[in-house]
Image (cartoon, rainbow, N blue to C red; front, side, top):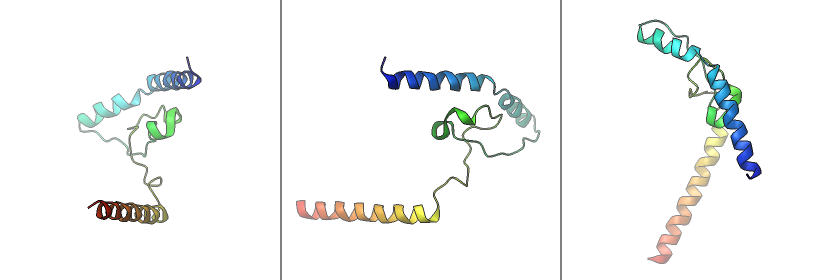
Length: 96
């Protein structure tokens, strides 16, 4: 098997093992369904951050507001989007 496939398999096995250790999530769901309180917490993103976020005992897909794009990154993204739109408009005008 290619080295990349072996790495992915290793990651998958690690994620499976860590997910097996995450038993508090079902307890929290049952508590919430029963009208109980579940302490909020920022969770990691398994896809973005990898197995290091596990086991969590929380919702592993929670948004971490400290990791969303900064104002500078958002401004840069807007500049790039504007340039892409300008290029597309120019190409469409040239082809029309």
